[in-house]
Amino acid sequence: MVHIEEGATIGDHAIIYSLGPVHIGARAVISQYAHLCAGTHDYSDPTFRLIRLPITIGEDVWIGADAFVGPGVTVGDLAVLGARSCAYKDLEGGRIYVGNPAHDLKERTIN
Image (cartoon, rainbow, N blue to C red; front, side, top):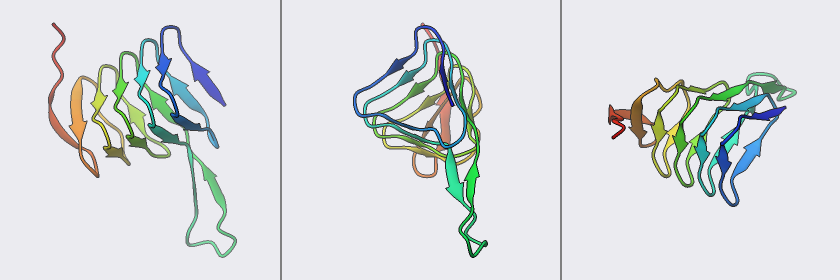
């Protein structure tokens, strides 16, 4: 359920909770204590049915320390999710996101 491309880095104590498929792109960095959670439950179902939704982390993405990426989220190439931020919906590539829920802060520029 987990596919990690060449050059990607997973930090100490990061959690890749792969109830659904998780794809981590080339050269992406998943920092220490970050949490990728590819599953949730249907709270409207009395059986609390498990829902498995994929997570896709693009190329050259940086998921900051202790950040959370929820089920069904795609993080576009070159995006940054700041430390302790939480992504519950897709993040556009080439942008920096912070907060809970994550909001677009600014463009990511590469020198």
